[in-house]
Length: 223
Image (cartoon, rainbow, N blue to C red; front, top):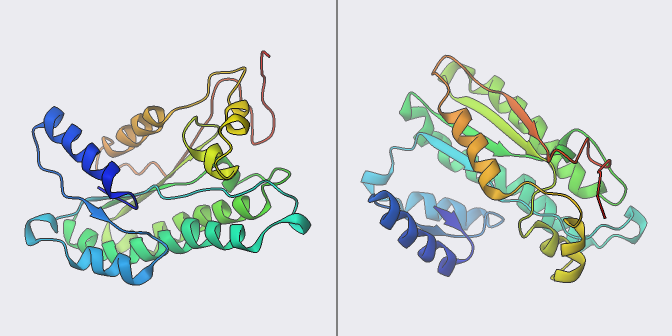
């Protein structure tokens, strides 16, 4: 398991080991840092190098301004995380996946990867890039029998909106009021469904939304 916040990883490691009675190896790094990504993957002990599955889950939105009011720092963080981070990690893991003979990459994209909404400009562009990269990888890795899937969630009640609104928890909470949003476990179930498919089946793309959401900008709230 990987992530920026080591204390969270350590807590999750303990939980998994208790429930699953299996070992967990953690790597703490920021996907935006190319050298950190490469060093982390190079540091894997020999018995942790048999990698079958990569889930590219790192991603965020920053701000929801129209382009002329956007902040360059926000743009850079989204592009560096959502696009470059996926590139750095995927390239570093591919040598392991190619040895697997059963490799599978799952990219967590977004409904914003095929639609655009007001104020979503750069975030939507970054997720369009994830969509394009998923398609490109599927073509390029065909000869290696590495499956490439993409999950594109709609509104999911995670830290997403808190991060988007720079820590404003009240503003973030309003995003999910009046309907039942997706949650992280919903997306994990979709990932498991993909991974449990027979070896001759590649589920290329799944878009999943709350029942109350029709597309990137149409939502039915009861209050």
